[in-house]
Image (cartoon, rainbow, N blue to C red):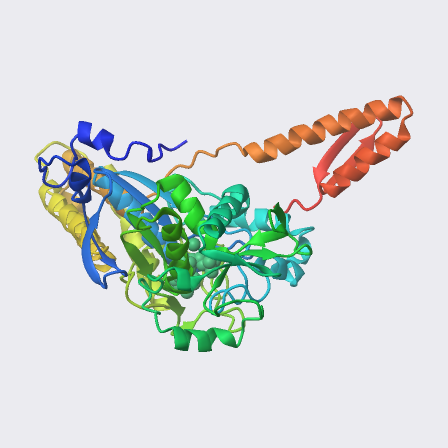
Length: 534
Ligand code: AMP
Ligand code: ZN
């Protein structure tokens, strides 16, 4: 379990242990000291529209949340470019010695198809996916969510993204979401209609501070066309809870059966794991409005404190100059690009794909082309051959490359610290590779070792040299379910032996409802899941 920020004694530990970074100023009030603690990282802040120091609420600790995907399909390389920005910040923070708590969620309920323009309308993306051609192979929506979450994690690891400190799922935090909605109602920031609970935007004057969307009239106009609840007081109001007793995923709440709005999960899970004020919140550029604007409204209306002091947004990736979409046939996934070679010439090393995704600055529009990928494949091959050269270097003598590589490492670190300048960081790495290749015949064992050490440090920052070993954690939830299934099977066998067939049939029905197939044989009964997709 990661060490989470202790929000009960704000700042006390920092007072006892002075900050590791930034100037130490003796002041009577610990909070004043905390407000000034730096991270050694400068990042563009969407809130202020400028590059500024990433300040930390608690010295030496970075509390960071990044919006994860909705698991209704495979994540595409655009999604992964946003996750890569978060990964690079995580790596940079750790390299600088910060204690980083990095939380990134899985949205497995509540994200509607029209949420990006008008809140609380359209169909649930998960339910819609189940009814699509792709969804036919799943027996229910939970199975679909489980499958695509698994697929996400496999692609995540293939791209060498580090495991976050916490990866919470919306469906596992339902109680907290319901409690937050109750509190917003009690505080007068929300109201109930026959269709759901809405956040009252008029009750939160700072609405619009992130996206600049403050012009209520044009906003009303844009949303009015698609909003269908006539009881909504203001078209800008957004759903905290949708009443829907027919929905495929539903929970019981003080307002009957239903499911949460999309925005509430992120502000609830972020504050649950990181405290009321985060240092940094990230996501793709499309999330600035409405998702992040709504997260701010909910969280700040609840706590009365700033929700996140720094906001980072990754510009969208396009493919060969066009927006990625399934209908255009240019929807690229990690698994497709890294699978064995096909007629398109895909089938690349995942770390080459990672290099391609970081070859453009996160804040600039990024055009992913075959040429970009080809260039990255070449650079990646140079890394592999450099390792071979360095490993085979023998003989005594003075280190002939160490100092120059060290200077190049400093360049990489400085580039990343200055608004995550990945093109400049990669340029420095490529220069280092050129040096190693150019000196190949003159390297001794000492030089070989310093070259390998350099690559290891580069890997810590950029993750492009070798994959981090992943230790699979046992899936506690699956284990629990398996135990229950085993127990039911034993009970069923006993019922049959004592000729209580009614009970035996009841248990079979219960297992069928859990999507379990029972196989009876003369030696006993076994089971398997109905829709185990490999
Ligand atoms: P979603 O699954 O739609 O919630 O998206 C997950 C994350 O990927 C969010 O942070 C989005 O902003 C981001 N994202 C979606 N499409 C792209 C894209 N084409 N380029 C970069 N990021 C994207
Ligand atoms: Zn989010």
